[in-house]
Amino acid sequence: MSERALSGIRVIEFCDEIGSYCGRLLADLGAEVIKIEPPGGGRERLSPPHIAAAGASVDTSLAFWVHNTSKKSVVLDLESEFDLTQARRLATTADIILEDYPVGYLGARGLGYEKLKPKRPALVYTSVTGFGETGPHASWAYSDLIGQATGGVMTLAGDPDDPPNTIYGNQANISASIHAAQGTLLALLHAEATGQGQRVDTSAQEAISISQETAMQTWDMQRTNKIRSGSKGMLPIDVPAFGTYEAADGYVFLFILAPGGEDLPALVAWMAEQGLAEGLEREPLAEVVESLNMETLTALMSGAGADLASKVTQLSEIDTAIRKFIKTMPARVIYEEGQARRLLIGLVSTPADIAANSQLRARDWFLTLEVDQAVTIEFPGPPYRLSETPAEISDPPALGEHTDAVLAQLQSEVP
Image (tube, rainbow, N blue to C red; front, top):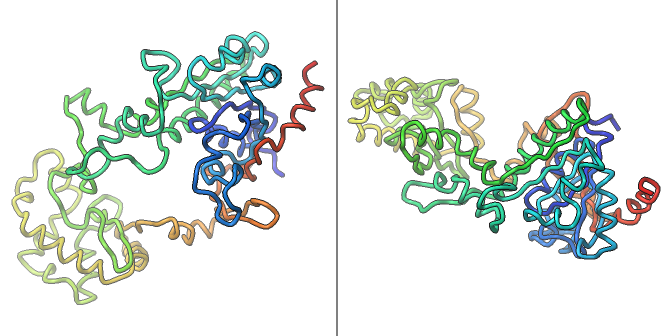
């Protein structure tokens, strides 16, 4: 096995749903991540769906697998004085403590940063919580949906006529974990250089708020709330060849008017080759087709472009012809042929499409992990490629799989 980026680093993780992906990122990079779990497992272990071929159990939750690869599992009951003593002893061996308990819970049990810092001056102590360690909301109840709502992304998700939408998955938790990993690695770099550890305080609300991109700045600088715009984006009117289009067997996304590819006349030329141009290559529509490019879109977004906006009927006619053309072919054919013509077309991939994606297959991104002796599964690879210290993903642990071995080793490490 190659030397990995975090080889030799020990992480004691007290995490369930919010911070577990942070621990997984560190573990896949080679850190020894010892996950302290309650008897029976936490919420993630009990979350459906489960790996179908292996049956439902605390060791087969897909949510747990996705967030806990490459770790060790030690079962300790933090409400038991004996087990709590073991947890405290383990914590004194850590380079990094990672936790997502409610604010104050671990501190009340002798596992807070201030208690551990004198024993481990270089300790990096990362807390991942809903609203952060301080402020009037620090102790408020939190779930991922609450994070999405209070972080602002829900008000921007969906079509204009929709109520606020959630985005798929536990994206507030994932965002918090990713930013916690960044902060943890920066603090570790500082600790290795100076011998001084520090606390890393990560708020899920703050982390997911960054996904609003320019929405907060728009309010700060223009006193304007951005609103849900669906596939139309920032454009004040619907324009052809921009948005989601139905194919014969799925969907594609067209962004023909963006920089980096050919403009609309190239799409119309393709349609004409197939005998499906519907008159778009002739006047008066040809002039409108020729004028649709990034320059005119920029004018529209800035409030200019009234001449183009006045041609709504013609824009609708052009769009109808494009939609009819797109629907005649399978999504993958449109995607691949469009890209060959330098048209910005993307396949709206289902999970099955991603599993069959030729680019991902060519890069050997998918891995094979073993659920048990009879069941193996294919698993997504790491989110980055390091040429000299590569990430390596291994199976997540069975509940309590390493309890005896880790506690036996602890006896020799901590008198």
